[in-house]
Length: 285
Image 1 (cartoon, rainbow, N blue to C red):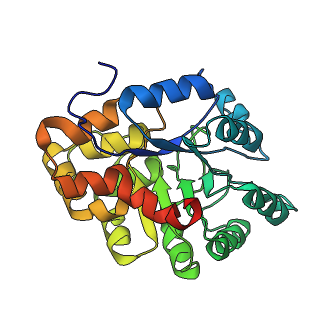
Image 2: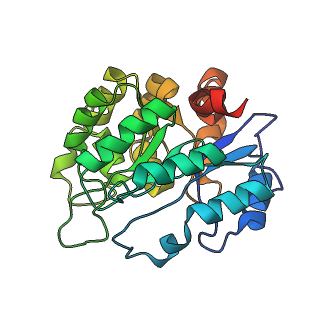
């Protein structure tokens, strides 16, 4: 790959899902990576859980690390902070960092159900504060405790109804597998078979104006590429509700979007930057 991804032209790009001090990428190395892809800005997310983590890399995703990176590169990083909603002083902690300049609540990834009352309380606060909530949702796999965060998608609709003022951005395998109507039949975290019918996420994205989704990580990319024709139709249909994000340090998500001019300019502009900018525009002007 050249210093900038081929065929990127002069498009604006905002990566809505990045982490610092993750897989060896400190702030400087992450900026270099963004430069190589031609990415203008990135949302930097924390990961906080009072339960600890089965994945050691996540232990370094503190608000302090995110804020340090933002202060070092204020024109490149937009800070998010998802305090664990089970903390007794969760509202106070969030308020402190919002006063400092945090622009969103993410990545919300805890070992409770997506509609847990503690989480709902924080979602409502985010709605009052104008903070978008980016959440990770997982798949129920009892034999693998690594995949058990914000269970489950059936509770998401309750959240969307109860928290009308809050904007949500969905992410993770427990979300993206539902691009297919037969998702419940699959025993795989990342199903590879053809998409069958219109899955639950199509219904939710079209029904609720406060719901978006980012295409990041293996889960998002797998959903869009497991059935190439239907993946393209999905993006073309719902481009006003989708955000470019990676959660990675490679170019696969951009390569998918830019391949062979498969998407019109209005689709690319919306997914690559307009939707992301819209969700926090009033906060960064």
